[in-house]
Length: 95
Image 1: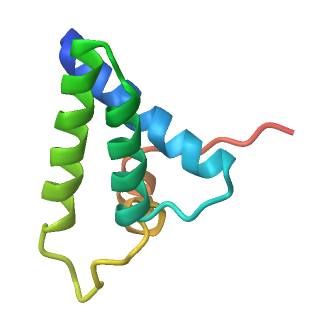
Image 2 (image 1 turned 180 degrees about the vertical axis):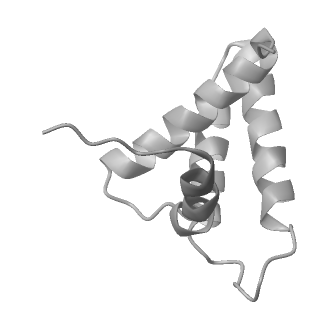
């Protein structure tokens, strides 16, 4: 099953926001990601990308309020998602 164009664009703008944080050596937290997405939304003129930023922002808000095992709202996305990523994919290192 392939994603439709809107879902791919949401993934793309989310990835761009995360990459911006990482390139700036910032923490990847919910607050930082929301701030980056909102800043990008403010600067964007393309209607489709603006909608994608809004969808991404809403998605982060929804993910943030998911029940969790005692972690506070300032937890890092990188740490929170690591277990899910590692449990669903194998990491292969080539030397």
